[in-house]
Length: 265
Ligand SMILES: Nc1ncnc2c1ncn2[C@@H]1O[C@H](COP(=O)(O)OP(=O)(O)OP(=O)(O)O)[C@@H](O)[C@H]1O
Image 1 (cartoon, rainbow, N blue to C red):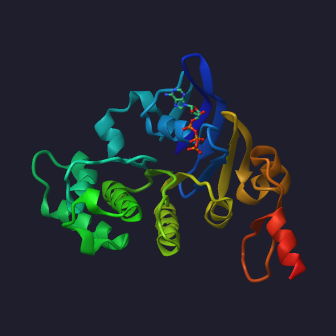
Image 2 (cartoon, protein in one colour; image 1 turned 180 degrees about the vertical axis):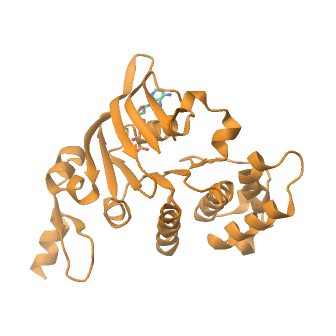
């Protein structure tokens, strides 16, 4: 679905990404992990075609991203960006309706409004429909953006969902629900690529992980193979233990100081 081939990106002779390659297949959930400044958001911008690679190529459904019309692309892939600063007084409903812009010309149809309502419900903000966006809390605003993103791809099959730190500001329940929604999209044949800071969430939800260090691939592959104690130490400079509690189906990463404390009790 997405084939990333040796992509590189530079700003004023500063190399932000170098020779990154990976493939996202339908139904896969990829987490991009790495320290601050590793190039994760830059990579999401290249995948969404917000930025064009300085070298290499990104193919989406077999066609070079550069060859897509923006409207054609908008019907197949949606992006939840890291920063969504909107200060204008749009209502929640108006923001989510923006996700339907690629699908109607001047006026939304009944179907578009119904999808907006459905997506508002899916992320648990139906009661905020008429509220002005700038008056919402940070976590509520993030859920509005998630609803907008979902509304854009609600009727798409085998599309692509790009999420840059999707759960920023969300409480525990809504973080869980956001990842569950992303999983539902993979079951509909979507590829999901998400920047994830919480490595335990990456282990819990992602099938595949791309670990970046200094703009380059440090490791990529199955989540459990990439998120090892050695790799985490090398990339984040933190000693961790990867433990396997009996009652969870996935391992858990514990910073070593905390692990030592746990073993004392
Ligand atoms: N337009 C730009 N001009 C100069 N440097 C830039 C520009 N955009 C990004 N950078 C730098 O490129 C590096 C990678 O940025 P990027 O936002 O991709 O990192 P990230 O891995 O998403 O970081 P974080 O975890 O902090 O969100 C950073 O050091 C950033 O300061």
